[in-house]
Image 1 (tube, rainbow, N blue to C red):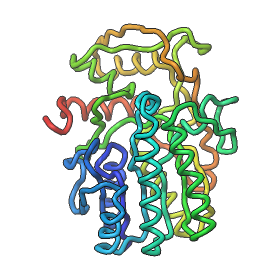
Image 2 (tube, one colour; image 1 turned 135 degrees about the horizontal axis):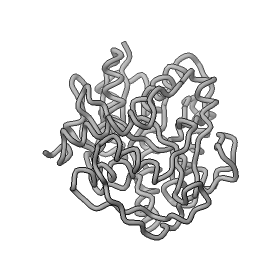
Image 3 (cartoon, rainbow, N blue to C red; image 1 turned 45 degrees about the horizontal axis):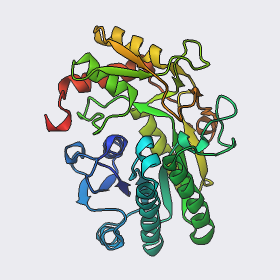
Image 4 (spheres, rainbow, N blue to C red; image 1 turned 90 degrees about the horizontal axis):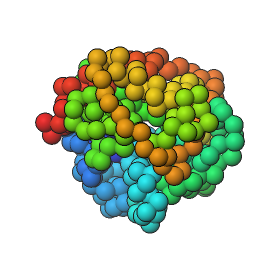
Length: 328
């Protein structure tokens, strides 16, 4: 049996990763400072150690306490708008945390890491669908901090033999009703949970921009079920364990859905009217972002199984049963 350290394992995607690892028989250790995560989302028998990944002494204690075989790192700040207003916060936390984690791995001879990267590393892409070999030119500090970490991972591979998979997400959504975990951010910036909050009557729904060069004028994005997403992380970990080559992988469905299509699908799934107010564009939102997932399919053997209606239905089930998030 292997012991996997999940950094940020009390967060949305991290908690789903923990649940999958436990289901597959792994021992799991979670490190999280709980500034955005929820202790309730960490299911037994995972071991939770509360602390900051930037704290080198804390990480060294965890790596000494447990026989860590590999790391999956979700620990990061991820609000694009906030990163523009406070880039130092994002570089200090995201890059600084990665430096501490890789230092602990080097010191304790741990040689495999799966890193939570982002489609924001591409910036405004020149073509669709986006491939891993396309230009990376982030347009916000969040994406730039993740790209900087990818560069650090390459150098650490060459210097210390730490093998990595950098998984560039597109739009994760959905929940895992089997273990009662879902999406609960404060503030919530993601479209699908905001649409469902409006369906519950908790907030009004604002959509940004209907004059983009897309079929209905609203932004088009690639949505992936969070359970499919974490399956890819486990496949990436197993790939590295077999001696696979380090590098980036896109994680998306390969299909694009507009903002209006998301709202219409949610209306069908929930049976609610979901009124929405259209607002002007937000700066920095590319019209279309769709992943080519060919590399993940061919190299990792990953195939996303769950479509948009299932994503929204699963998220809706969790939001109905947790109308106040983990606190209610």
